[in-house]
Length: 441
Image (tube, rainbow, N blue to C red; front, top):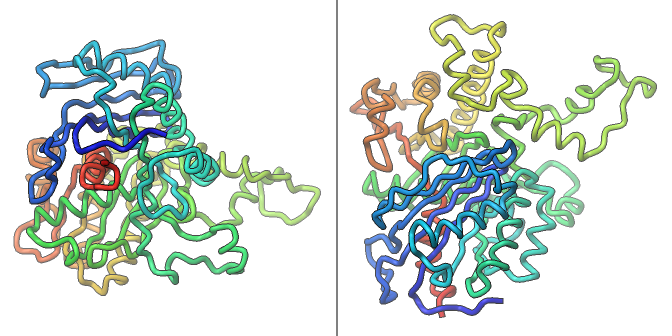
């Protein structure tokens, strides 16, 4: 295992999605090791993104303006076949495009979606690697991708520590009566069957950023945060801690996503695969259904893609005909209204759990940050809770783009704010790494 280092050197943050890889590169803002005070402990040097890993050719971007290089924009790279080769291609560009030697990297921070009972980041050893590997069944779209990059790091960066940052860790504060399921508790405890929650790194970044924007300590804030993207979830924050979140044992529960069903009647999957195409308990008409097949249907063959044929929510909005009355005849409108309905259902539920004391409703994630029409529809639906409407000018895409990390889009005079936060999980990992003395010798 790699050794620990004094507080100098570079930090790499890696975020492996199901078919993408996002990488950010940071230096310590103060190489003397002083990371106290209000200043940001890390400085962004460059970013890179690789997309379309599941539908080649992969697209590669590399941007390092701080080093005087405009980088590469959306370049097709046929040699990138998977997450490991994507990471290898990035390391090559690191030297060629930015002139950075990989030996300067002392820590690589990996976003790992499911951490099980891990409540803090860990330097990845053989033991923790295999523990994460065992949890892959609970996050089939993500943990495997992270592990392939971690393995590539072991080989390409043998002198750097690989550190796992778990999305589940943020939700360790959820009370037992909320995290537990109404099943045999002996079985539940033995097999770890409980609500874990996800998108934790994003929620941590948002909480900190909103607290700074509102000029309040994080521990004083009650928030309802919407992380809306291909994977979508909602989180209720009470006094700066996670009280409840929509995802559960796995990321499948809660809101629908691009290919995930979200919460459904547990027995639906059996009737969905019934040979007769109707509800029946006749064993002659039943089809044997394996767990892996059910998970594949609900994780990869559902969501708004199953309704509209596309995973692009921007395309869904453009074809939804929002000026007309709701109609199931238009699949894009159906998907839009269904998503809006599920979101507002969680907002209402969490508003009650927070006893109506909510400082802000926060939109984040790719859709939350760019879905002007969805933000407007959700705000209209929850206006009765005291949030007010969005301001059309503030909610406009051009305004949101030019504003800072947190953008206030609500009308003036409301105690309960409507905000957008441009979340950044890579920054959150790098900050935590820089501030954690245990990772620096």
